[in-house]
Length: 467
Image (tube, rainbow, N blue to C red):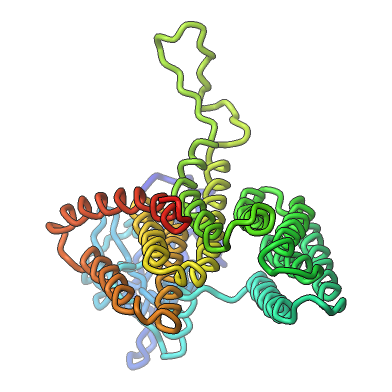
């Protein structure tokens, strides 16, 4: 302990250099106990006190902690003890005299071992402390997020109902346009209030705008109406883009969906190709884009590599130089882009599964290959959200394919069951087997991943009738 000048030491309620804290047990006769002048350190502040040398420390500690303002929730849970200058812990059941604490000794009031189980006075305190430490409290921003999620979900359900109603009634597209306008205004209001969550309103506004474009025109549901839906959704998303500020890379996902809608409409009505041919190409493109999205995001981050032997190379930046935009911010933005692209590609493939499963074994093989590629691609991903998006997307594609097979293609029931069982066994083995077997399974998974990626374009060509 470092020495502190006498005039800077803390004195409490007395002009004398020592303060008396003498606790006498109730059963003893009232008499002045012998006092030992000591210096007690707490919170880096020394205090000169006169403590009883005959009373056990367990009776002195409550009053001592109260005088030194050491009573808090940690002190009440873990307890306090006194330490000598050499770090020896004084026995609380014995007095200072029994432990040969001399006058002028320097003691420290500290918490007991915080790694031990805390002690509580009653059950209410224990439950309250556990809830406070282990559970996250509900905050006003959580209420805002829940309200946004509920509103977006209700509007999406309304959009599905309007889409089911179809064209012919002017009230249907008008209702979708009105809801889209409300969502756009709400997104700008959240942007002005600096409240997070505007991206959900932007996505919902794009979906409702697509419903308005799809129901505003008469004709085939897979031709010009799809083009109108994609164009309207893209316009709504572009209108809301200023509200996202630093989160604009997430618009890559909705943009891909809009391109898929417009491309499907052009392929079926403009070029005259069958629907399942166009959807096979869309599925293959969505799978490839989802798999190469991390590499595209990495390539978009500016990194300058300077070699010592390069002539005329630019000067290297020092650690104190400011880099604008920062590398960390760009990486986080690209993380949002990758997640948005994965989710959008999964949704695109999901909408194509029912039609592809009707084409026969080649369509089923293409769907199974895409689902396996989605799940196997997560082996090289670190982010939890990316892994969750890949695995959930792949499993959702398999589930939809299995449901379609059971309901309409009974001849493909057993192959579908075999594919689902193989995926389940592979996932179980990769997570349950011991570490000694995992390297071999990992090498096998690498080979399977390469084979799956190589089979997606040929299978799409087979569905289209090219091969």
